Length: 147
Length: 117
Picture (tube, helix red, strand yellow):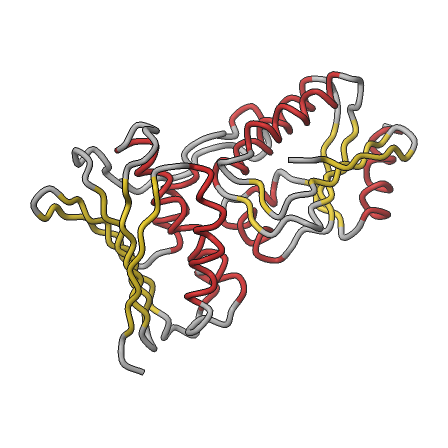
C-alpha cells in the first residue's frame, strides 16, 4: 500500500472534538484493526487539537486548524497545523501521584501524557507563520501492548 | 448531556446517555454528578455502557467526582466499561484507584459491601 493522505480543517471549537474523534477513527480503521489502538489514535489527535484550541488560540472560536493524516502499511502520521504564536510546546508529561492517596490524583495534564505515552514520535517545527505538530505511530510492532 | 438515574437501596446508578465524556460536556457532566452527590447520594455506580470515548477532560471530571465522593465518605464504582476505556485507566495507573465491576449487579454488590463497613 502506497502512503495515502487526507487533509481537512476544523475550527477552534471544543464542540467539534467529538466529530473529529469519530472522523479520525473512520479514517484510521483502514489500516488499524485493533480497537484499543484505534481509540488511542483518535484520542491523541483530539488531545493535540484541544491543546491548540486552549493554549495557542486561547479558546477563541473560528480559528482554523489543519489536519493531515497519512496512512501507510507500517505507520500513521498526524500533522496538526496552526497559525498561532508557537506557544504550543508539547513537553512530555509524567503522572506523579500516589494511588493510595486520592487527594494526590491530578485532574489535569493527561492530554500531553497520552500523546507522549501512545505515539512513537512527537516533534514540532515552524514553517513560516505555520506551526506544525507531527505525531507518528509505527504499526509494524507485534507488541501493540504499548498502544 | 443527559444522565439516567435509578436507585437500588442506598446505591444510585447513573448512566450517561451520551457516547462520550469529553471536553465539550465534561463540565456539565461533573456539575450534574455533583448535584446528585449533594442530594445525599454517596454510593454511586457509574454505568458506562453507552460511553465509547473519554478524553483527558472527561477523565479529570471523573477524578474530581471521585474526590468529592471521598470527602463525603462515599464511594464510586464503574461498570460496563469498554476495553479501550479500561486501557485508558490502565496506562494512567487509575486501575489501582478506580473500582470497576463487570455489570450493574456486581457493582451494586461491591457498593453494598462498602455500605455495610
